[in-house]
Each structure stands twice: as structure tokens, then as C-alpha cells.
Amino acid sequence: MSFIEVGKIYLIRTVTMIYTGRVKALSDNEILLEEAAWIPETERWAQSCKDEIFREVEPYYRDVILFKGAILDMTEITKTHTVQK
Image (cartoon, rainbow, N blue to C red):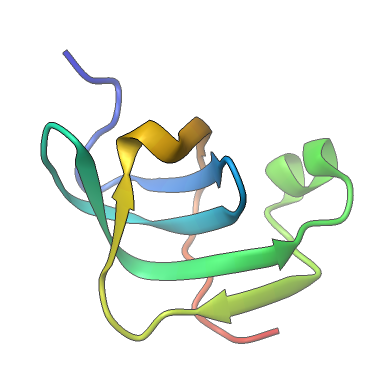
């Protein structure tokens, strides 16, 4: 069983980085994200989770594969972040 749902948008914290994106597909070990972005800086974490506003956004222009073993936590958000900031 997995709580991660295809089609939903998540804010994902890994051991070294933070990402946003819409889950396109899942495998046993990987998550495929579309409309993905790397978030280099968030401001205060709780405020960023609430407002979905980030200081820096570096979008990807192709799908991104994340390995589930590197993920610390995920939370659902309402929109993707595809504009560089």
C-alpha cells in the first residue's frame, strides 16, 4: 500500500534537496514527477508549506525520477511551480 497518489502534486523533502511536482507514475523504488522543480531555498519551512511560496524555484523541463529511499517526507500542495524564481 502507498499513500502517494498518481496525479497529485507534492512538496517533497529528500535527504539533500526539496522538490515539487505532480506524480506521473510510481514503481517499487521510484517516483516519476512531471511539472517538477527543485526548490533551493524555502524561507521558513512551516510558512512555505502553508503558503506554497518559495524564495527560489528552479524548474525542470522534462520529467524527473526520485528514488523513494532518499525521501524524508512529502506533503500535498495545490499547484506546481514551473516558473524560475
